[in-house]
Each structure stands twice: as C-alpha cells, then as structure tokens.
Length: 468
Length: 112
Image 1 (cartoon, each protein chain N blue to C red):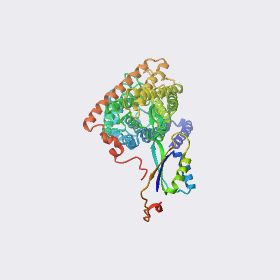
Image 2 (image 1 turned 90 degrees about the vertical axis):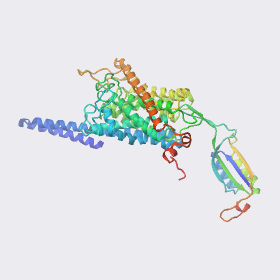
Image 3 (image 1 turned 60 degrees about the vertical axis):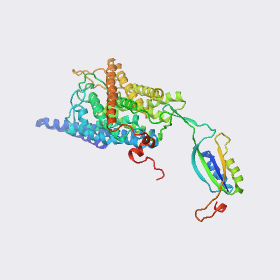
Image 4 (image 1 turned 180 degrees about the horizontal axis):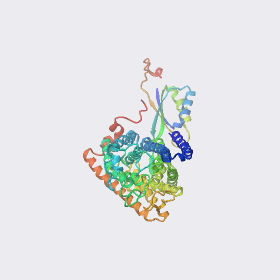
C-alpha cells in the first residue's frame, strides 16, 4: 500500500513535468484550462492516495489496540478463571459497536446536528462513501474517516471493562456498553469533534476545548465511567483480603507493548493525513510513553524498593493516555514532561490513594484513564502551541494562540470545562445506565458464579486446558 | 515395606534423583505441591498492592521400598536435598500394608 502511494506520487510528479512541458508547447494552441484542471486533479489524487494510505493503516492500528492489545493487557491482569471472559469483553465490542456505528453511531457523533448530539443524516451510512467530507478531512474518503472514528468508539467502552472485571454478567456488560455508547460516547464525541459541537475548537464550538485524539472523549469518559462502575458494582468477593494476583504478566506485557505501537495510529492518525503534524503527534506520543514508564518505575522503585515490569507497562499506558489530547499540539520536551507526570501521578493514584479509599477498580481503569486523561487534558491547556499546530485561526485567517505557553492562560479553563463535562457525563450517565441494566438483567453474577469464574459460568469454557 | 514421602526444594529434585539412582533406587512419584513449615514466604507487590505469599512451591517425592533399603535411602535423600537453610523440607516414613503390581498381580515386596 505504501509502495503504491509512492508510485502514485511519482506518477503524479511525472504527469506534472509532462504537463508543464506540454503546457509551454501548447500555450499558443490556447488550451490551458483543460491542462491546468488535469494537473490539479493529478496533484489532488496523489495527496489523497498518501493520506488515505496512512489513515487506513492508522485505523487498523487502533483496532489492534482493542484486540489483541487491551484484551491481552487486561486478560493477563485477572485471575486465571476469568481470562477468557475479560478478553471477550474487549473482543465483543469490536463486533457490537461496529454494527451500532453503521446503524446510527457515526451519524449521532459526526452528523451536523445540535451542539450536543449529531442528527441522523448518515444513518445506515447513507451518503458516506468515496467523497471526502471537507469539514473533517478533505483529502480522504469519508468512508475512511468513518471507519477510523469507529475504532475509537470500540476501544472506549472496552477500557471501562477494567473496572468491572471478574464480576459482571455478560448480558449486563453488553447492554451497558450499547447504552453507554449511545448516551455517553456519541454525544461526547459530537461535542468535541462533531461539526457544531459546542466544545469543538475548530468547527464552531462556543467553548473551544483542545482534544487532539481523545483525552476527554475517550479517556476521561471511560475512566470516570470506570469509577462509577467500581462504586456501583461493589468489590469483588474477597477483595482486598484474598490474593488476586495477575495470572499472567506475560500476557499483560505483550498487550501493553501492542498498545504502545497501536497508539501511533490513535494519535498520529488523528492528524487525519500523512502530514508533518502526524509526525509531530507520533513523536510526542512516543516520548510520553517512554517518560511515563520511567516515571512510574522511579516512583515505585523509591516506595517499594523494586522496579516492577507491571509498573513499567502501566506507566507507559499512563503516559500514552495523558499525551492523547495534547499529542497534536505540543513539542517533544513538554511531551516528555506530560508523560513523566502521568507516570508518577497515576502510580500514586492506584498504589496509594486507591488502597486508602477502598473501592475495587479491578484493573485500574479509573486510576490510569480517568486520572491520566484529566491530567493530560489540563496540561494540554498549558503546553499547546501554535508553533506545532496552526490550524486554529480567527475569521480573518490570523493564527490564534493555543495554550499558556502561547500566552493564552484562559485555555486551561476551557480544558477544565471540557474535562468537567466529560467527568459529569461519564459518572452520571454510567450510574443511570447501570441502574437501568441492573433492573432489566442484573449487573452482577451471583456469588457462586463469581467464585467459579466467569469463563465457565458466562461462556462455558476455560482459558487453559493444559491437560487436553 | 515402607513408604517414604519427602517434601523438598524444587531445585534439588535433579540431585535427589541422581543420588537415589546411584544407590539403585529408580522408582518414584513426583508431585508439584505448595506448602510451608517454618520457612517464611515472600512479599509480592502489584501496583502497590502487597501480597504475602506464604505457600511456596515444593516437590513431593514418594516411593515405597523394602524395609532393608529404607535407612540407606533416607540418608541419601536427605544428603542430596540438604542446603543447610530453612525451607529444605521434611521426610516422612509410613508402614505400607500391601503393594500390588497391576500388570500381573504380583504382591508384596516383589511388586516393588
């Protein structure tokens, strides 16, 4: 695909040269308008090919974050009896959210509707085809944009499953995720990224919130919903007295490293083209992951005397979470700072604060995504600069300052408002949805099923049949 | 006939097997077990959550021997399994009422 893009660029180049020569020769023949039009079309098609290639790869990378990335990361952290059920909670969303997205999701998120939710113009993907949607991404087919955004809608509810792992009914999890996508994710995505959404800094929002790749939309909403789930569901039976060690940190390790790689699609892909902005976001993402790992390990090493592998991989995810909203707006050095800060803060959250407060956020979806996401959203208001991203302009076309480093300290407040809306929507929305799901099917498996494990009781199979 | 049941450190299994083989004792059954006596466990920390692991992995070696061979076997086994540190394990000896070789119904010591 890459070669083909290259080839097309070369092809466009030679067409361009040929046309220039031809143009000079035929100048007297007085046919330039046709030639110029052909030239423009060739250049456009070359850019579209390059951008589309990167966006399709990015879409695949983001899907890889959910399965196998997140499925392995979470699957390794639970006890052996729940490994399949936990992986299934990620995997099934790859199927369910896809269908929901095709029916109404894309339209509710990206249809031009009210400031809080999209309309139904793209229902059943009506009119979503090869033509670009210039409001969102002028150089790629709208269908590419649609499928790229779908991958975000898949991973976001999957992140929440870390909070209710090892005790939620499969039916309840399905129902919760569908309602959550409809009433929390689609509105939030529309508010921040949809045309006319009221937090959208670039497409007519009243409160311009900077969220390059989903700090508020993905990580704060999912992280705060995770807290709501942990509180509503209650602790796992036996927590915290019985040992609940991760059954395979090897799986978690592989999963976290896949997340690191997949995140390049998540953040650099959010440039929506193969541009220098994509490079900048790629670099910021990578640096934050590295610094996040070091931050967590350093804090842990000082407190517990040992640098753990789980600490390292948790720290890199924390760094990646925090850089997500900032990735397309900040330079590499602030990215290092944001990542490191997230590593330390998220460590303190899950290792110290959580144990003091006593709620059972099984796999720390709140501690990492809720806290790391909020930290990243706020720090975006500090470090965002138009030296990296000059897309924000006033009506006269003048490039506007972005964050505190550009002299726009008020952006921190905008970021805080965006975060507060995501926090409120996540927590309140989740509580209401959980209440409804609880009334309809019951959210929690009974005590005996929980003891036996979800693999057997929910799915009728086991993860490891070593004697088979 | 006596049954010898020894709980030993897992990393000592090869030495024990070799030592017993050298005095002509081949038959044994090995089980991976967990347990603890006076040896304290260790601490594991996962995201700041501490777990005290007090049941440690051990190997249980079981064999049944004619009375005459028991003393020699015990000495050899203990010698091979010993490191001198706490946690080396224990050996128990039981009387055995009967032994039957399933293949041909041999009984008693000739079944061993």
